Each structure stands twice: as structure tokens, then as C-alpha cells.
Amino acid sequence: MQDKASQIIDHYERHATAWDADRRAADWNDKPWHDRFIKALPAAADVLDLGCGSGVPVARHMAERGLRVTGVDASRTFISLCRERLPEHEFVVGDMRSLQLARQFDGVLAWDSFFHLTPDDQRGMFDVFARHAGPSAVLMFNSGPRHGESVGQYRGDPLYHVSLGPDEYTALLDGIGLDVIAHVVEDWTSAGGRTVWLAQRRVHRTA
Image (cartoon, rainbow, N blue to C red; front, top):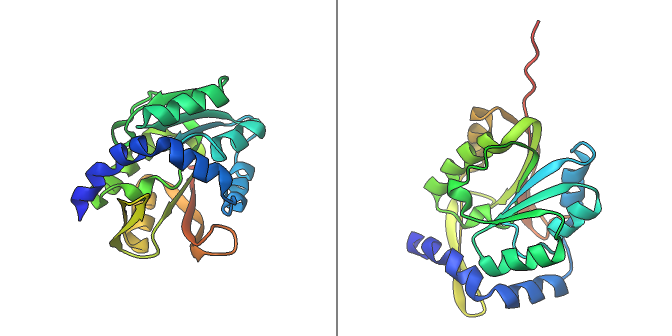
């Protein structure tokens, strides 16, 4: 099944225009979590948006709230749309798995993107999170409710998803110095059924 993970980048590039139109037409059923993420950040925070898509609604909403957004996506079409819509912010064509921007951010977001990676690639992403998460940084991502793989579809093409188990996510976060501050499994009230993780960099105090 994991061979379908290798098709994700081509999938989104091939369907970028249709996906953008569908996303803009749909209800934004996960907005409360994005507001919670923003509320946890300082004013004018720098945010790294991994798998930013076309920038609507998430990156645009963060920009409207005064945050400085750096978006990364492997789809050139998505990044082109982001640059047109949010020219005062930075958008990079790149693969989140190998990202090295040589700077840190107040917030790191991997929403509706991280769960397309294979289990080993997801584990490797915690090094990427650690490299880019500054002191007191907030991280938010979504996963599946339990360990397992599934293949959905979009416009007739397979769409791969996978999740590690909750204990492993908790351990991986702890391993890079982040504490879970909120975790809801299949939140139908404010996340459209998504399973959400919100974590923050642990503050080390000296005596």
C-alpha cells in the first residue's frame, strides 16, 4: 500500500486547480483549531506551514491575523497560487521531509499533509519539526485516530493516508522536547472528524 504514498506529490500537482476550487467552495469545518493555534502564538509570530496547499483558507487566515507565514509545498501550482494571493509572505517549493531552512519559527503547522507520509517518513518529520521549532514554539498537526493505513480517493485517483499510534506520537513529541497540550480523536465538533495534536516546546528553567 505504501507505494501509493510516492504518488502523493504528483496527485496534488495534477489536481491542484480542482482541489483549490473544491477547498474554497467547502465549509471550513476545522477553523476552531486554527484559531486555537493562533491564540497560542505571540503577536506577529513567524509560522511555518508545511504542506500549505493553495493558501486558502489557512495561510490567508493566519496572515489576516497578523502572522508572518512561510509556506512549503511540493506542488508548484499551489505555491504559485499562494504567491499571487499572499505576496507579502514567503512560499517555497519543496519537500517537507528534507526541509532545512536554517531558521526557527514560533509556530509549525502540518495540517492535512503530514498524514500522507509513510510511517518512517512521519517519524523522520520529528527531526524536521525540531530543527524549525523555536523556543516555546507551538506545533499542530492531524493524524488518524489509531495506527493503520487507508486509501481514499479524490477525483478518481487513490489518496494514501497513514497514522502511527497515539502512544508513538506522544513519545516522538516528548523526544524533541514538546509536550502535548491538546489532543482530540475524531473531533466532529470543531475539526470535521479529524484527529488533532497540539503541542508546545518545553521550557527549561535554570535554578
